[in-house]
Amino acid sequence: MTHSEHNPPRDPKELYLSAPALVLPGRRVDNDEVIERVRRNFRGSASQWRRIERKIRFAFDMSGSRYRYLDDESPQLSAAGYAAQAAGACLAQQSVRSDTVDAVIFGAVCREYFEPATAFEVAAHAGILRPRMAFDVSNACSGFLTAVQVFAGLTAIDPGLHTGLVCAAEGSGRQARGQS
Image (tube, rainbow, N blue to C red; front, side):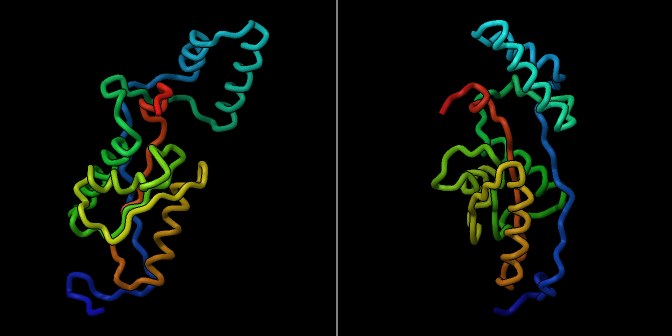
């Protein structure tokens, strides 16, 4: 394959990773409010609740997290919809045109479905209409990092692969409401 001046050949060991774009819903809630919301919806006994609360607090303590972000304005947005918002923000932040993106990789725990890949939906929402490839990777909490590693590996074996978009979204309104 020949390369234009715009896309000169690059050393396969050379890879530029941009700063991520992070899009958070507008409403921040702390751990105590999350626990209160769970408590209001819990239907078991007081002793069962104490065990549940203890496990939730343990998870919060282990992760070191204090806040969650809720989307009260568009609770029906899918995981792909949220990821597309971040994808669009990343493309704009990096001044990358959507028609130059070769690959879209969705690396998250939350997926709308297994096949076809959520990455295709993200690509369509972000205006990436003809990526060379689009697929999901899932590796629990390491999915996003795994997606970056997969793209790096692909660029090492495919010299025509130049621009990739790795995206993820967690906890969409649809999943929070238990809809499938």
